[in-house]
Amino acid sequence: MLIDTATINVRAGNGGNGCVSFRREKYVPFGGPDGGDGGCGGSVTIVARDGRSTLLDFRHRRHYRAESGQHGGGARKTGRDGEGVVIEVPVGTIIKDHESGETLADLEEPGSSVVVAEGGRGGRGNARFATPTDRAPRRAEEGRSGRERTVDLELKLIADVGIVGLPNAGKSTLLSKLSSARPRIGDYPFTTLSPVLGLVRYGEGESFVAADLPGLIEGAHQGKGLGDRFLRHIERTRVLVILIDAAEGDPGSAYALLVNELSGYGQGLDEKPRLVALNKIDLRGPSSDPSPSFEGEDVLEISALTGMGLDTLTHAIWALLKK
Image (cartoon, rainbow, N blue to C red):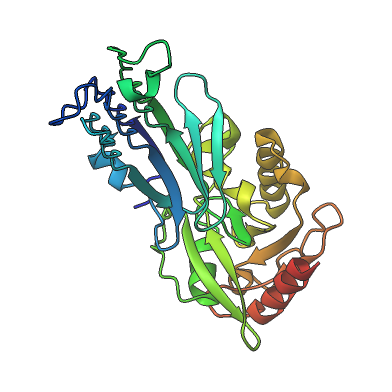
């Protein structure tokens, strides 16, 4: 199950108060002020980590609190800083402010991070305020409050190749043949309910990541079907494979519908390098019409079930990625 959106509330720790204190020591009648500073509050940081592929954890925990700094003490003792909170998310997560919609960070690389709530600064003790004209200040600062905010997390899968097609076009079968991924496969539409990633090995020591994306229907860019919730994942891909079912309906119309949905969604999806693969060739009768031209694009005839043409398709994908 892929959970690709979540909303959480984060609150940084408050700064500790500064201390009002005077040095009292035997035989030292005028010891002077010695109040220490308060510690700083802990911050809340979000960091991208490999090995995480979902935002599911944030369905069960929505509130994150950092520790506040301790108050200052006498003898110029500074309060301890509060411990911060580090929230780990998958690589490819976008962090947005819930109120304004402002994008705070796009964590595209492992280890990249952003501080979403800064801890409050500790207040200064009265020792900081001593001057030649005020040698016994009786004031200290209060610690600053830590920031609290609500942030939206949005995960966009990072894959080299996105397999796009109508429901039941054979996308899951294709991914299972190209890689070791095991997506759900069935003889009914919308078998794939969430994107699935698979590692495709090519040659000696080379590989690329392919994503099986849920089937698109007419109006998907407007939210119909599984809609633009999953179209966003295609933004991260470098190459698209448009998979057409050769055994059912009009392949030309299916191609036009898919290209129209990519164009309607925007974000440059219709301008990405792409290949057209005509699947289920083994199910076409001997009297079937030849493959359509698809607006002049080269068409690769394959059968994901039998493996026919998959080596040619893999080579074509790799050549396009290398460009």
